[in-house]
Length: 456
Ligand code: MEV
Image 1 (cartoon, rainbow, N blue to C red):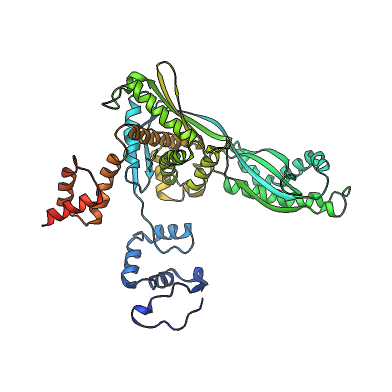
Image 2 (image 1 turned 30 degrees about the vertical axis):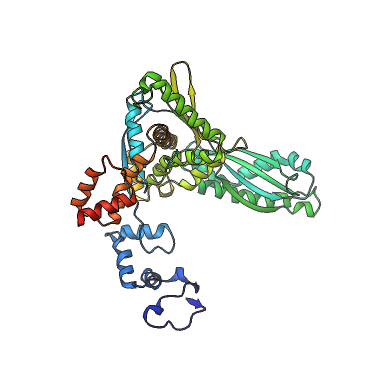
């Protein structure tokens, strides 16, 4: 290992590592060595090492598993693992695991789940399950001759990856289509192969990327053998081959509905019709205003991400697809919408969602595995329905609060624990504070004053 820019470390507090030093070979150090080196960035290295180690798994073999999920692992970062009972989807009731640090999300999802379980539950259907990948390449020849060659190219490419597709085909998946797209009006000589896949219960990222990379190599070889082309036209350059996280054909639609009269009890000030109208206007605002749309959709992903993380799925991929889908009209909009008929309120969420229930972390991470078991070992489409339901549940709770009593009352009540912990309140103080703040406004300053008064 080398450290550039460093001399001998001086003693005392100056002994702390200079932050502008570039370290090389860090990944090759032993875990203990990494820990020691990281601790040098602090004034109290001994305590830092103890704190980081206190979050290690007590079972060394389990810890090794976590270490190997990533690179340069020195500890684990805890996030609460909660559950939401009473989630009724298409007549079946689930206990849904959610991993999230934001205090009000599980509470919001739970209240929404209970509310809708008494009004027919959530309804969900899969619109489609296709995934997409691309081989981006550069070719100098005439576009027409490439299009004419496509039937042979398709056959050649599909034959070149049978070793990769064999197992997926046994599970009912595989390559669905390979389309040539001429992009030369955007970038000179740029084409792409747009490939669609069915990956069944796996998210399919590794499968798709392996197939695409192999396609790239095979396409290059195939073109080099086309003697009808000039020397330079036989040289096709592969720019890159990668799946797309935009999955507008991997879509789940989830909704709740009830007569207006069943919304009469939502708010003291509004009857069911007035509440539904106000709620609908709030959702419309998220369709016409990008500032509101972003926050509205963030509320949806509070629910979806929490299920994705709990089940070992890639929440960044899921969110990226959702935000791109929200902008598919050319304007970023709400992913949910309200349809009111003469006497029926219907709240709908339509989202793309590439998830897996086999492969990846789903069976490697012990809690992801257990989450899936808690859900009855769902298929990927079933998990799409469950995760989107939690997105809609959170979205409903948020917009309901916003259009009635406001969001802060509930949020700050949930946040009270965080503030109390900040002041290191003991159990007795916590109990007293919870009682006191039942009818008082929770704020950082108010809690500080209250705790100080208790401690006087
Ligand atoms: C907070 O995490 C999410 C909300 O802001 C969502 C929304 O405003 O719809 C409450």
